[in-house]
Image (cartoon, rainbow, N blue to C red):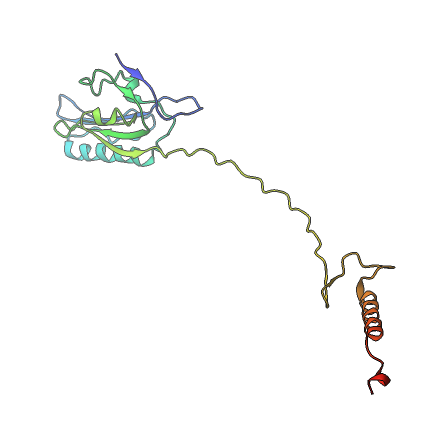
Length: 201
């Protein structure tokens, strides 16, 4: 029994994993043709030059791999095929990120298959090579709104002599007028408590 459980949580629904198959097919007259499952791909004409057709097929598979962007929300294509690519594994737990693999048996050399599969199935598949991986999706970072600027608190204006000009105004002892009054009061106090200059003589 085969089960599926993706460890990469995603709110979006998964889309079917893609697959590309390039096949070299021989004919009774010792000619061969190259076909691709992608509609619209231009293939070379039927030929007796099997070596050239084999090179073309390999390059065509590489071109598909280069232009295909692995989608992080793709479903495992191997799972869609009942995991027939690794029949020895009784249970395939499809987990991990999506990767793009190329399956090609060099001893046969007739079929090149690209597929989007999960990280668990990829190493279980025969003659498979991981070519690309889906980019990791990072959770959105919440934007922090800076606090509103607080109005500046006015500081007392320093005045020579240690006095503060805060609250100074008409009818107060602040400002320069207040300093003059304080000076005159001090002079009177010293005059009363001091000696008479004539008595000092």
